[in-house]
Length: 99
Image 1 (cartoon, helix red, strand yellow):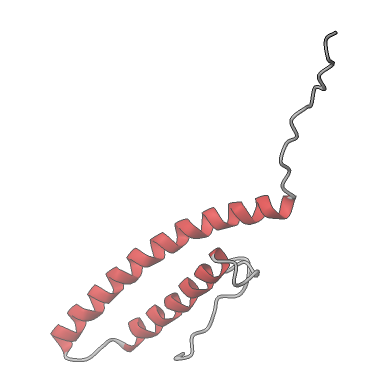
Image 2 (cartoon, one colour; image 1 turned 180 degrees about the horizontal axis):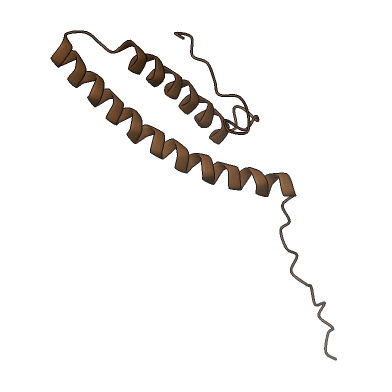
């Protein structure tokens, strides 16, 4: 007598739409963070050269870099799930403590 085997249909893992949306945002902001990181390195080099040439730092460049650092921090917070608000351009650009 052959035993009847129960055929089970494999279930698909479903992810609710906000998770997919967050995953897409995370990919986008990871790319933006990578670009910002290299841009900040470039600005640091420019600031270093300006200090060598002028014996003083460029205040506008310092303020801009400080704001970029604050934005980079918001992106890292979003990527690490420590903040749920999507960073700029979907929310206001952060203000740094120095500006």
